[in-house]
Structures are given as structure tokens and as C-alpha cells.
Image (cartoon, rainbow, N blue to C red; front, side):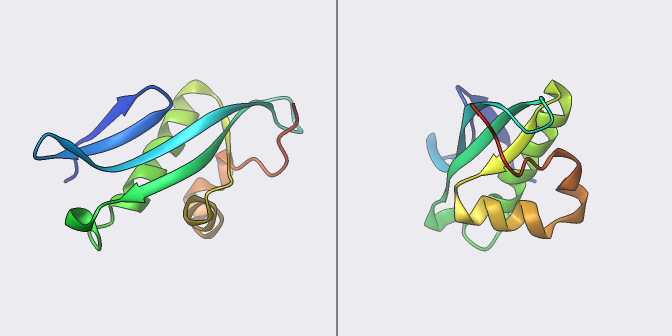
Length: 100
């Protein structure tokens, strides 16, 4: 199991004292339903964690955070966007058109 930690507008996984993978987001105002929204703009997984599901685990961590904080989630990061759209369990927090 991956130990995912929270930073400022990011979640990350450390390996040997360094960030081996991370996902970052910005606040995006509110979505079309008036719900506060965040947008994932970057996901990165280092070589030491590739192929272990770290990227998807990070997206899932953001989704769970959004549920706890009652936020909707969008993404400009192509990886996160694909995971969000293709995972049926994440549809409840998906934000299609944030507005500022």
C-alpha cells in the first residue's frame, strides 16, 4: 500500500526521503452547479513507482478529499482527466465546466 501524504494543494508519495510521485491542483471557483471546484493540473510518477498504480491512487486521493470537503473536481492534466472520466466511482465529484 502506498503512503500518500498531503501538502499545499497536492498529495505526494515519498520514497527514500524524496517525492517519488505527486498530484497538484488549483482552486477553480465554482462549477456550473455552484459547488466549489478544484482542477488537477499536474500528475507525475517517478521511475521508482511506475507501473504500481501510484498515479491512479493519487487521483483517487484527490477524489476522496473532494468528497470530504464537498468539492467538485475537474482536470487539465490529461492523465487525471482520463482517470476521472473512465472511473465510474469518481463520477459523483466530476466537474465539467468550472466558472470563475
